[in-house]
Length: 84
Image 1: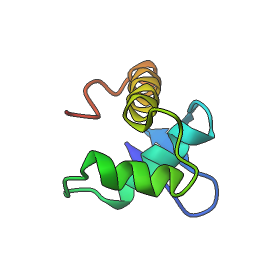
Image 2 (image 1 turned 120 degrees about the vertical axis):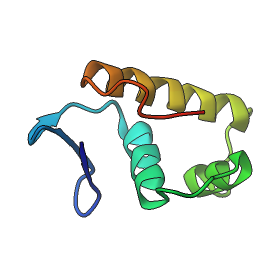
Image 3 (image 1 turned 180 degrees about the horizontal axis):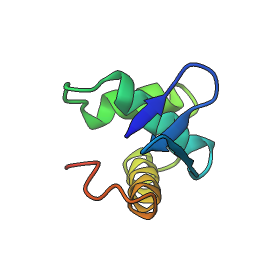
């Protein structure tokens, strides 16, 4: 698996591009890829994703993005890519 973050965020599996969901999930994937090997706390993720434009329930909004990203990665053939 390769995640390209310079230019448009892209996911490649075995050298083939795989579709990703909306911009929010691509943004989350890029943030996680750039933080590989580090633990990111929920407040840090929320701040990085929404800054001062917080949704009404940031924790729930983050969980929705994580769920959509997990589904996209599973559809791309990458099981358990995001470990909780």
